[in-house]
Amino acid sequence: MTAPRLRCFVAMAINDNPRYDTNVLHFKVLKPLLRDRLGINALRIDELHHNENIDIRLLREIDRSDLLIADLTYERPSVYLEAGYALGQKKPVVYTCRFDHFSRQSQYQVHFDLRQKNILQWKSPTDPQFAKLLIARLRETLAPTLRKRETDEQERREQEQFLSLSPESRSTLLDAAAGQFLRKHRIHLDLKERDLYPFRLRGYRLHGTVRETVEVHVFPAITKGRLAHVWGWTSFYPVPVLKGMRSTLRHKILVSEGTATRARVEAVFREYALTGPRTWAAEPTQDAEGRPDQAFLHVIDGVRSVPMLKRQLELLSPHVFPR
Image (cartoon, rainbow, N blue to C red; front, side, top):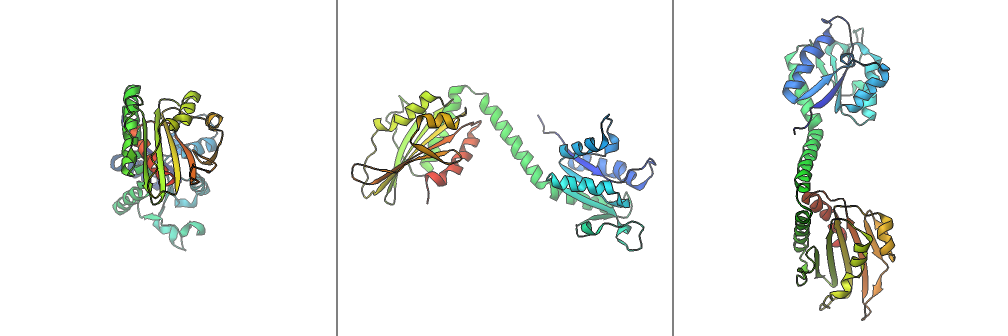
Protein backbone atom coordinates (compact mmCIF):
# COMPACT_ATOMS: atom_id res chain seq x y z
CA MET A 1 0.00 0.00 0.00
CA THR A 2 1.46 3.34 -1.04
CA ALA A 3 1.57 6.25 1.38
CA PRO A 4 -1.17 8.88 0.90
CA ARG A 5 -0.26 12.12 -0.81
CA LEU A 6 0.90 15.03 1.28
CA ARG A 7 -1.68 17.76 1.85
CA CYS A 8 -1.04 21.46 1.42
CA PHE A 9 -3.51 24.10 2.51
CA VAL A 10 -3.33 27.33 0.48
CA ALA A 11 -4.25 30.58 2.20
CA MET A 12 -4.71 33.46 -0.24
CA ALA A 13 -7.08 36.14 -1.49
CA ILE A 14 -10.18 34.56 -3.06
CA ASN A 15 -12.33 36.21 -5.74
CA ASP A 16 -15.33 35.07 -7.80
CA ASN A 17 -13.63 36.14 -11.04
CA PRO A 18 -11.77 33.10 -12.45
CA ARG A 19 -9.28 35.47 -14.14
CA TYR A 20 -8.32 37.08 -10.86
CA ASP A 21 -4.56 36.62 -10.56
CA THR A 22 -4.58 34.67 -7.28
CA ASN A 23 -7.23 32.33 -8.74
CA VAL A 24 -5.02 31.73 -11.76
CA LEU A 25 -2.03 31.25 -9.45
CA HIS A 26 -3.85 28.59 -7.45
CA PHE A 27 -5.79 26.64 -10.08
CA LYS A 28 -3.45 26.97 -13.06
CA VAL A 29 -0.09 26.87 -11.30
CA LEU A 30 -0.03 25.68 -7.67
CA LYS A 31 -2.42 22.74 -7.84
CA PRO A 32 -1.01 21.07 -10.98
CA LEU A 33 2.60 21.96 -10.11
CA LEU A 34 2.45 20.48 -6.60
CA ARG A 35 0.48 17.45 -7.76
CA ASP A 36 2.70 16.55 -10.73
CA ARG A 37 6.12 17.49 -9.37
CA LEU A 38 5.81 16.66 -5.67
CA GLY A 39 2.74 14.45 -5.26
CA ILE A 40 1.03 17.04 -3.04
CA ASN A 41 -2.69 17.75 -2.92
CA ALA A 42 -3.11 21.53 -2.69
CA LEU A 43 -6.49 23.01 -1.81
CA ARG A 44 -8.18 26.23 -0.74
CA ILE A 45 -11.14 26.53 1.57
CA ASP A 46 -13.48 27.48 -1.32
CA GLU A 47 -12.88 24.07 -2.94
CA LEU A 48 -14.51 22.23 -0.04
CA HIS A 49 -18.22 21.50 0.14
CA HIS A 50 -19.41 21.54 3.73
CA ASN A 51 -22.19 22.67 6.03
CA GLU A 52 -20.03 23.87 8.93
CA ASN A 53 -18.82 27.11 10.40
CA ILE A 54 -16.20 28.14 7.85
CA ASP A 55 -13.66 29.21 10.47
CA ILE A 56 -13.87 25.85 12.24
CA ARG A 57 -13.58 23.93 8.97
CA LEU A 58 -10.66 26.11 7.87
CA LEU A 59 -8.67 25.42 11.03
CA ARG A 60 -9.49 21.73 10.81
CA GLU A 61 -8.11 21.60 7.26
CA ILE A 62 -4.89 23.24 8.42
CA ASP A 63 -4.66 20.61 11.18
CA ARG A 64 -4.99 17.86 8.56
CA SER A 65 -2.40 19.39 6.24
CA ASP A 66 1.35 18.79 6.14
CA LEU A 67 2.19 22.39 5.28
CA LEU A 68 0.64 25.73 4.40
CA ILE A 69 1.34 28.12 1.54
CA ALA A 70 0.43 31.66 2.61
CA ASP A 71 0.17 34.08 -0.30
CA LEU A 72 0.22 37.60 1.16
CA THR A 73 -1.05 39.29 -2.00
CA TYR A 74 -3.81 41.88 -1.33
CA GLU A 75 -3.05 41.98 2.39
CA ARG A 76 -5.91 39.70 3.48
CA PRO A 77 -6.11 39.51 7.33
CA SER A 78 -7.43 35.95 7.12
CA VAL A 79 -4.20 34.81 5.43
CA TYR A 80 -2.12 36.19 8.32
CA LEU A 81 -4.44 34.44 10.78
CA GLU A 82 -4.14 31.12 8.96
CA ALA A 83 -0.35 31.39 8.74
CA GLY A 84 -0.12 32.17 12.44
CA TYR A 85 -2.37 29.25 13.33
CA ALA A 86 -0.31 26.86 11.18
CA LEU A 87 2.90 28.01 12.90
CA GLY A 88 1.25 27.45 16.26
CA GLN A 89 0.46 23.90 15.16
CA LYS A 90 4.13 23.36 14.19
CA LYS A 91 3.25 23.21 10.49
CA PRO A 92 5.82 24.51 7.97
CA VAL A 93 4.68 27.69 6.22
CA VAL A 94 5.95 28.89 2.83
CA TYR A 95 5.24 32.56 2.11
CA THR A 96 4.58 33.97 -1.38
CA CYS A 97 3.47 37.38 -2.61
CA ARG A 98 3.15 39.46 -5.76
CA PHE A 99 6.40 41.41 -6.19
CA ASP A 100 4.92 44.95 -6.22
CA HIS A 101 3.61 44.59 -2.66
CA PHE A 102 7.15 45.27 -1.42
CA SER A 103 7.11 48.75 -2.96
CA ARG A 104 6.23 51.70 -0.72
CA GLN A 105 4.09 53.06 -3.55
CA SER A 106 1.86 49.98 -3.60
CA GLN A 107 -1.70 50.15 -2.33
CA TYR A 108 -1.01 46.87 -0.51
CA GLN A 109 1.95 46.20 1.75
CA VAL A 110 3.42 43.04 3.26
CA HIS A 111 3.11 43.60 7.00
CA PHE A 112 6.25 44.55 8.84
CA ASP A 113 6.44 41.42 11.01
CA LEU A 114 6.60 39.19 7.90
CA ARG A 115 8.88 41.34 5.78
CA GLN A 116 11.81 39.61 7.51
CA LYS A 117 10.71 36.24 6.12
CA ASN A 118 12.22 34.78 2.97
CA ILE A 119 9.12 35.42 0.85
CA LEU A 120 8.95 34.04 -2.71
CA GLN A 121 7.85 36.78 -5.10
CA TRP A 122 5.93 36.37 -8.35
CA LYS A 123 5.50 38.89 -11.14
CA SER A 124 2.63 37.06 -12.82
CA PRO A 125 0.69 33.93 -11.84
CA THR A 126 2.44 31.90 -14.54
CA ASP A 127 5.93 33.25 -13.86
CA PRO A 128 8.20 30.24 -14.68
CA GLN A 129 11.01 31.46 -12.40
CA PHE A 130 8.59 31.60 -9.48
CA ALA A 131 7.44 28.03 -10.18
CA LYS A 132 11.06 26.83 -10.22
CA LEU A 133 11.88 28.57 -6.94
CA LEU A 134 8.69 27.34 -5.30
CA ILE A 135 9.45 23.70 -6.08
CA ALA A 136 12.97 24.09 -4.68
CA ARG A 137 11.66 25.79 -1.53
CA LEU A 138 9.01 23.14 -0.96
CA ARG A 139 11.48 20.29 -1.38
CA GLU A 140 13.77 21.85 1.20
CA THR A 141 10.91 22.66 3.57
CA LEU A 142 9.35 19.21 3.32
CA ALA A 143 12.58 17.22 3.59
CA PRO A 144 12.09 16.42 7.33
CA THR A 145 8.43 15.48 6.72
CA LEU A 146 9.33 13.24 3.79
CA ARG A 147 12.10 11.54 5.77
CA LYS A 148 9.69 10.88 8.64
CA ARG A 149 7.06 9.49 6.27
CA GLU A 150 9.66 7.21 4.72
CA THR A 151 10.77 6.04 8.15
CA ASP A 152 7.17 5.48 9.29
CA GLU A 153 6.39 3.52 6.13
CA GLN A 154 9.48 1.36 6.61
CA GLU A 155 8.49 0.67 10.21
CA ARG A 156 4.96 -0.23 9.14
CA ARG A 157 6.28 -2.78 6.63
CA GLU A 158 8.67 -4.23 9.21
CA GLN A 159 5.86 -4.64 11.73
CA GLU A 160 3.53 -6.25 9.20
CA GLN A 161 6.21 -8.75 8.21
CA PHE A 162 7.07 -9.49 11.84
CA LEU A 163 3.47 -9.97 12.96
CA SER A 164 2.80 -12.32 10.05
CA LEU A 165 5.16 -14.88 11.65
CA SER A 166 4.25 -17.46 14.27
CA PRO A 167 4.76 -16.49 17.95
CA GLU A 168 7.69 -18.90 18.26
CA SER A 169 9.36 -17.51 15.14
CA ARG A 170 8.97 -13.98 16.46
CA SER A 171 10.52 -14.94 19.80
CA THR A 172 13.38 -16.67 17.98
CA LEU A 173 14.16 -13.51 16.01
CA LEU A 174 14.02 -11.29 19.09
CA ASP A 175 16.27 -13.72 20.98
CA ALA A 176 18.80 -13.69 18.13
CA ALA A 177 18.83 -9.87 18.06
CA ALA A 178 19.44 -9.79 21.81
CA GLY A 179 22.31 -12.25 21.40
CA GLN A 180 23.92 -10.02 18.77
CA PHE A 181 23.58 -7.07 21.12
CA LEU A 182 25.36 -8.90 23.95
CA ARG A 183 28.16 -10.18 21.73
CA LYS A 184 28.67 -6.66 20.36
CA HIS A 185 29.39 -5.55 23.93
CA ARG A 186 31.84 -8.45 24.51
CA ILE A 187 29.57 -10.40 26.85
CA HIS A 188 30.74 -13.99 27.43
CA LEU A 189 27.53 -15.99 26.98
CA ASP A 190 26.67 -19.06 29.01
CA LEU A 191 24.86 -21.35 26.53
CA LYS A 192 24.81 -24.55 28.62
CA GLU A 193 21.12 -24.25 29.51
CA ARG A 194 19.83 -23.11 26.12
CA ASP A 195 17.99 -26.38 25.51
CA LEU A 196 15.94 -25.84 28.66
CA TYR A 197 15.60 -22.07 28.26
CA PRO A 198 15.71 -21.25 24.54
CA PHE A 199 14.62 -17.63 24.94
CA ARG A 200 16.89 -16.66 27.81
CA LEU A 201 20.43 -15.38 27.49
CA ARG A 202 22.93 -14.95 30.26
CA GLY A 203 26.51 -13.74 30.26
CA TYR A 204 29.17 -11.63 31.92
CA ARG A 205 32.28 -9.58 31.29
CA LEU A 206 34.98 -7.82 33.32
CA HIS A 207 35.05 -4.09 32.53
CA GLY A 208 38.03 -2.65 34.35
CA THR A 209 37.52 -3.84 37.90
CA VAL A 210 33.73 -4.14 37.54
CA ARG A 211 32.08 -7.47 36.79
CA GLU A 212 28.94 -6.96 34.70
CA THR A 213 26.35 -9.72 34.38
CA VAL A 214 23.48 -9.53 31.93
CA GLU A 215 20.35 -11.63 31.52
CA VAL A 216 17.91 -11.19 28.63
CA HIS A 217 14.50 -12.87 28.80
CA VAL A 218 12.21 -12.90 25.77
CA PHE A 219 8.51 -13.41 26.52
CA PRO A 220 5.38 -13.09 24.37
CA ALA A 221 3.81 -11.37 27.40
CA ILE A 222 5.14 -10.30 30.80
CA THR A 223 2.94 -11.96 33.40
CA LYS A 224 3.34 -11.88 37.16
CA GLY A 225 4.45 -15.51 37.08
CA ARG A 226 7.14 -14.83 34.52
CA LEU A 227 8.34 -11.84 36.52
CA ALA A 228 8.66 -14.08 39.57
CA HIS A 229 10.67 -16.57 37.51
CA VAL A 230 13.04 -13.82 36.34
CA TRP A 231 13.39 -12.51 39.88
CA GLY A 232 14.77 -15.83 41.13
CA TRP A 233 16.53 -17.12 38.02
CA THR A 234 20.12 -15.99 38.75
CA SER A 235 20.47 -18.09 41.89
CA PHE A 236 20.49 -21.28 39.77
CA TYR A 237 23.37 -20.14 37.54
CA PRO A 238 26.46 -19.02 39.47
CA VAL A 239 28.69 -16.46 37.75
CA PRO A 240 32.45 -16.96 38.26
CA VAL A 241 34.40 -14.54 40.43
CA LEU A 242 36.80 -12.85 38.05
CA LYS A 243 40.36 -11.91 38.90
CA GLY A 244 40.75 -8.26 39.85
CA MET A 245 37.05 -7.53 40.26
CA ARG A 246 36.04 -5.04 42.94
CA SER A 247 32.30 -4.70 42.35
CA THR A 248 29.41 -6.24 40.41
CA LEU A 249 26.61 -4.76 38.35
CA ARG A 250 23.74 -7.12 37.52
CA HIS A 251 21.31 -6.34 34.70
CA LYS A 252 18.09 -8.19 33.88
CA ILE A 253 16.50 -7.18 30.56
CA LEU A 254 12.93 -8.23 29.82
CA VAL A 255 11.85 -8.18 26.16
CA SER A 256 8.20 -8.68 25.25
CA GLU A 257 5.65 -8.02 22.56
CA GLY A 258 3.13 -7.42 25.32
CA THR A 259 3.13 -4.58 27.83
CA ALA A 260 3.99 -4.63 31.52
CA THR A 261 2.52 -2.09 33.92
CA ARG A 262 4.66 -0.50 36.59
CA ALA A 263 2.39 -1.95 39.27
CA ARG A 264 2.86 -5.48 37.93
CA VAL A 265 6.65 -5.14 37.85
CA GLU A 266 6.89 -3.63 41.33
CA ALA A 267 4.54 -6.25 42.80
CA VAL A 268 7.32 -8.81 42.20
CA PHE A 269 10.49 -6.68 42.29
CA ARG A 270 9.49 -5.00 45.57
CA GLU A 271 13.02 -4.00 46.55
CA TYR A 272 13.56 -2.18 43.23
CA ALA A 273 12.82 1.54 42.70
CA LEU A 274 12.10 3.22 39.36
CA THR A 275 15.15 5.19 38.19
CA GLY A 276 14.36 5.74 34.50
CA PRO A 277 11.52 5.43 31.94
CA ARG A 278 11.58 1.61 32.13
CA THR A 279 14.49 0.91 34.48
CA TRP A 280 14.40 -0.14 38.13
CA ALA A 281 17.34 -0.40 40.54
CA ALA A 282 17.74 -2.30 43.80
CA GLU A 283 19.52 -0.85 46.80
CA PRO A 284 23.28 -1.60 46.61
CA THR A 285 24.39 -4.60 48.67
CA GLN A 286 27.66 -6.47 49.22
CA ASP A 287 28.76 -9.94 48.20
CA ALA A 288 30.32 -12.49 50.56
CA GLU A 289 33.71 -10.79 50.22
CA GLY A 290 32.34 -7.33 50.97
CA ARG A 291 32.46 -6.10 47.39
CA PRO A 292 29.68 -3.71 46.24
CA ASP A 293 26.90 -5.43 44.28
CA GLN A 294 23.95 -3.69 42.59
CA ALA A 295 21.09 -5.08 40.50
CA PHE A 296 19.01 -3.41 37.78
CA LEU A 297 15.87 -4.38 35.88
CA HIS A 298 15.14 -3.04 32.38
CA VAL A 299 11.84 -3.63 30.56
CA ILE A 300 11.51 -3.35 26.77
CA ASP A 301 7.87 -4.05 25.99
CA GLY A 302 5.49 -3.43 23.12
CA VAL A 303 8.09 -4.75 20.65
CA ARG A 304 6.64 -5.01 17.12
CA SER A 305 9.71 -5.82 15.01
CA VAL A 306 13.36 -6.79 15.21
CA PRO A 307 14.60 -3.32 14.16
CA MET A 308 12.43 -1.82 16.91
CA LEU A 309 14.10 -4.06 19.48
CA LYS A 310 17.56 -3.21 18.16
CA ARG A 311 16.82 0.50 18.48
CA GLN A 312 15.54 0.06 22.04
CA LEU A 313 18.60 -1.98 23.01
CA GLU A 314 20.92 0.69 21.64
CA LEU A 315 19.06 3.33 23.66
CA LEU A 316 19.50 1.11 26.70
CA SER A 317 23.18 0.32 26.12
CA PRO A 318 24.64 3.46 27.83
CA HIS A 319 22.82 2.43 31.02
CA VAL A 320 23.86 -1.23 30.83
CA PHE A 321 27.37 -0.71 29.44
CA PRO A 322 28.57 2.74 30.58
CA ARG A 323 31.97 3.67 29.25
